[in-house]
Length: 491
Image (cartoon, rainbow, N blue to C red; front, side):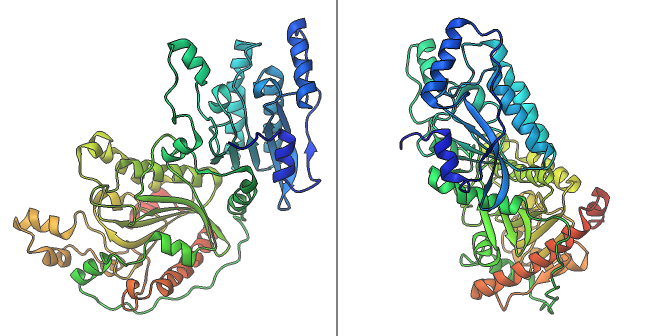
């Protein structure tokens, strides 16, 4: 663990030189007892600041932002009424002025000197953050060592994007309190940045000197123009060969076929990976990110063929992670891009216990009614309800050899013929191909493979990227469709 930076050190490190402008006024100390007043005075002298939080505005890479920074040197960064007033006032000003908000808490939690009147300030602070988010403004959080108690349980846990300092103590219950109450130490390795990342609670673990870059990249996407975006020329629709259905299925299963990671590498102009649900779950079968294709920003949800294995197929956690992305798109007014490429959702007791069927239903309902523009890309395999859960969209694009089926063709053969020998026949009969779905109006356009995406991965991904850029720019101009319009294509 590196030496803890003061609030002013962090301001100097992350924000543009000379751009900091404080919003703070001297805190009111009415009714403060003599002993507590002496502690406050000593804390101010020790830390060089007048409260445990500083608020203000600054520029980061030239972009104007609002900032909340905790100061641990002032009574362990604890939050009393005066600090809460300062935080709420700062958040409300950021909301009024339409500014993105960057918070860097460091705190032991509620100020015990003030007790319950300080404790209940979590409500006001959370309400102010919620109003800022409801206004469609980004809220980014950098958790520092330590961030615990009421701070972690309010403004520390409400970020659209949340990053933490390496090795930081981050959690709800302070370990000293736990040991005092239960006469045993808190288990090691739980309340750490790294564990929270592994559990899908935070998005990244980065040292202070690296956060300026990631915050700026995230804001470049989150604050990108939604209106007045220049239209992107239509790359056109090439003739699509009528390839046999079984041939499409076998080609889509090639292990060297490009998936979402190569698509982003070759086609996206910027990517900021996110991680997990933010609520203690993650699934390697889904990739969630903020991204741009050309100048068009989006929230990106891609089923990741590399993360799905026989031992670890895509589970209900992946769909809960996807629904986090849907909420982000709705709050921030960003288009949502979903990518279908899955061997199928997990068929297991764990998946059933985890509510897989309900997650598929909720994903379908959320996508059909989402108040943000939506674009689905069928990239490869499309097995079962786990694939269908990401299909509903304003526009649907498909790779030439992509397909969608209620079961893998082998499974359909087992049901109808009680063997696996009729898989190819079932694939043909069930109209699974992108070209079949295009004829039925489910798919809007097809991206050709020449002759197979696996044989030309970079060129294929760039063709897909050009189509996504064109479609996203059009969706930004048209806005989201209605639930009726989205459902009508399946009639």
